[in-house]
Image (cartoon, rainbow, N blue to C red; front, top):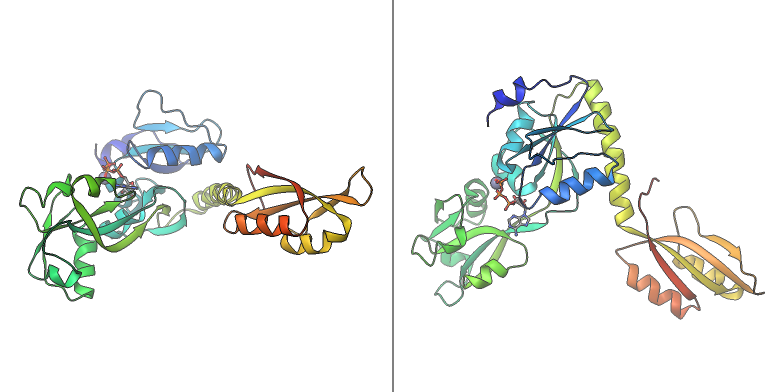
Length: 297
Ligand code: ATP
Ligand code: ZN
């Protein structure tokens, strides 16, 4: 598939064009995010290009490696892609928003029972990777003179077949490294999926992007927060409300039982368990935690 094929497709000028990975680790996260933003995209027939039913958005399904270039060249306006790919491709694009999925790290790994111990031991050694640009910048910074062997896939087998002494590859759980008797030595880059955009969007397209971004942020915020309901004796309300700032301040409603109130608020996922423990210690009872679908502040 090439640029021409996309340009020749009868695109509607009023549409925002977004590139999404055709299949792979970013596909599900990308499609769920669009769905949570209330945008219906059906890709039943494995098509290259799908028009969203209820938003002026045209979705192009591409290899993730091609997305930064297509965004730079304005073949598409925006895209969902990993920070690792953005750093390696080094194109003129704007990174707009982290998306919270596709989290992984690019790491240097070495054979578990080999002679290498630290990154300085990589001097005059060979490292296999699909990320030569990121790795060479890293080695320069650390003043390590290693040879980079670029390979496009199955990097993890390179040490075993004698192609390289170490590898630099994406890791999430570490299970691939483990089953190839490799161990992580150093993290080179942390990555997650981000929304990227062309640098010269028309005003019309920028308005559509802002609309989409507004929805993405509401979805992200909702995921990071929970709705909490609890009962509290009135003499403990002050202490409990201090623990629950809420979006403005907590809602307090009297219970039918005298001397008790129901408190409603929103708490962040980050310090969730701490807050719950403190609420209990301060006399809260019947605590209910409810997921939030969208959150507009
Ligand atoms: P394509 O055919 O689109 O080029 P690919 O084989 O390059 O696919 P995937 O393995 O599907 O790509 O990974 C896509 C992206 O998912 C990576 O670039 C990275 O941002 C992210 N990712 C998250 N976790 C991992 C992981 N454990 N290994 C590889 N990629 C990961
Ligand atoms: Zn790829």
